Image 1 (cartoon, rainbow, N blue to C red):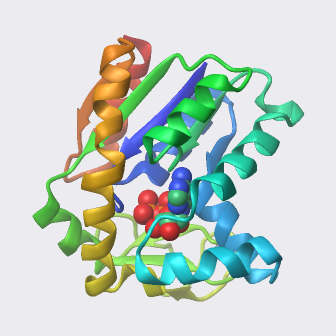
Image 2: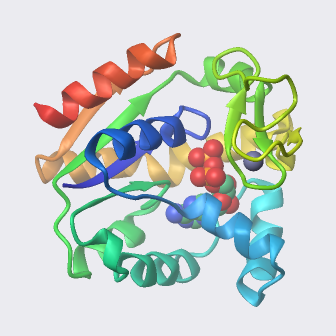
Length: 210
Ligand code: ADP
Ligand code: ZN
């Protein structure tokens, strides 16, 4: 199954991508994680992306389209994949439609803006492996430490409230039109983000299996 997760920054796409991965045994592809990795290893692409990311703006289409095109050609995508954070603009969706894959379903995790800003303040990531946590909703086993590698949990610089507002604005103007785009293709399902992660996961899996 080839899936797309849509949703505002901080709506919980990454967490749901992990759930789907575990259930369907298909890879989750997060453009945000791929870009942050490139940034950490200091590649040209990473350097180019950083200034946009720091301002809460989207990275140029041609950069992310290239990333996804390469990633989807890898062997582990043969039996399906879940895209987390791509496409985020109409041109990205059109480029994806031209790649050699058919999208089966698009799930939007819907969370109202006021809740997004509050949630983001509690979000933390592992400085070493990038795993994500939340101080209220997805606590690590040991406070401040990553479950997988023991790395320190830090706040992403783009999770600061000023940047979150900029990201939300980008979301509403550039990404939200994708709902219509996929609705017209008959592929869109909307899941209301719940207080408890497990409840959202149940709804997400039900939407996929429907
Ligand atoms: P979130 O979903 O919480 O916003 P991500 O980790 O998916 O976080 O994305 C972080 C940043 O990476 C975005 O604000 C943007 O700058 C960049 N980015 C990730 N995916 C894309 C994309 N498909 N198009 C453009 N920029 C992207
Ligand atoms: Zn870690």
